[in-house]
Length: 333
Image 1 (tube, rainbow, N blue to C red):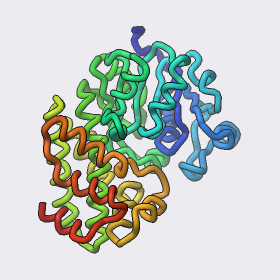
Image 2 (cartoon, one colour):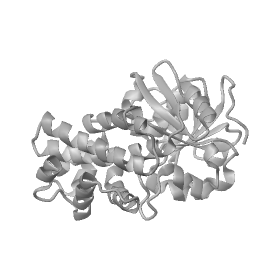
Image 3 (cartoon, rainbow, N blue to C red):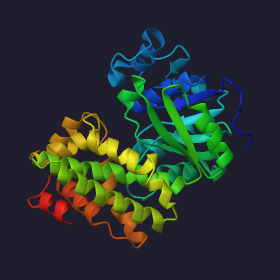
Image 4 (cartoon, helix red, strand yellow):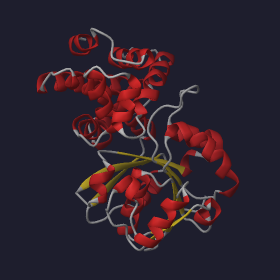
């Protein structure tokens, strides 16, 4: 595989113009890349090209001139040195299948977090299965990366994981700017596990807070969630250090504590007595923890790992609401 170029302005295709894809396109452009953003909706691509904003997902945050946009995936992918996959995990397989004939032989950087329903696969595993790319071409990003804050260029950091660590280092350099720092690692499975389970934990923390409990309960549930995340990761071959870093506790703290976190907002609504559908509407976007919770639990069972907190959240979302007694069980363990 040709290495990811070390030139000053690599060409990057970002496939997915939602909040995270658009914010990551901004990061890449700030770091000196030339970016083409693929959008499913023509009006989004037109707005990015003509007004330099994506108001549907990032409000009035200005996008750099180095970010172009199109609805033509072939155009976005032509000549790309890096492909960034920025669609929600549950849509990733279908989109990748359509894009597969167009993909250049370059690194594939997956932004999707969670576990695919039905297969129990993490995002990088879906990429490998659909594209046939080897592990040296597949990378993942995870960290405390709330898109709206990144679009404001608030200071932020993340982890870029690839089993080929020189590739991880080059990819991290390609998305490091004055406001955004990326750290390379070879622990892809650890980053995948951390990115998937943190959404489930954020739902649990939200439920507890929505029920009226304070910082002590929040900290207790978050700590249990980190312990379960680490336990699953170690069983799957991850490094313990990953869960003490940005992809682990860093992302967990941000997702469980920010009002900008959709998973946390959905949990708050459930804790206040809303139905699942009402909670999803209140979140205002994809709530990956809802679909991932049962899938994470099944993946853990296959690995012989018990995750009591994840099991409680999975039972709640399967029932369509937070059942009576859930808060007490989440806090008490």
